[in-house]
Length: 158
Image 1: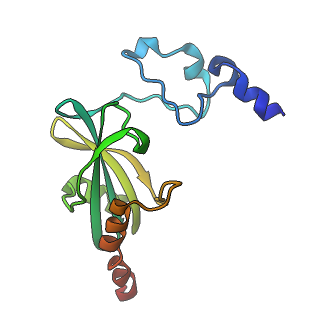
Image 2: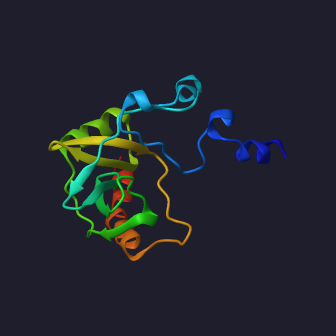
């Protein structure tokens, strides 16, 4: 009951934003004071990658020595599965700087979300437990799995 009541409160009172919601503001000075005082909330500069009129985000999936990069395009600067308007075919073009970051972090399996800002890759999220959507694997998801599956051999050779 207490948790339900907390969800009904305005964010300034509850200290958290609604699930899956991001607060995007034009300037740092517009960030509400309560956000700065709330442990667990992160404020960071917002970057986007443009492809014409659309926004892009790249998801690099990897398993051992195998890669697959899936690029999604959306009309919203917050590129999510539900607002994607175009999905590009999977490819294996991974920026060397991200390969180095993966090595530094010690990831054998996972997914990095990234964009390009002024031609340089910017890591947005590093995830050790990538998953499929609630609707299961799409055709593109199945293609990514096919590309990654031989990476299991990498583990067996170690």
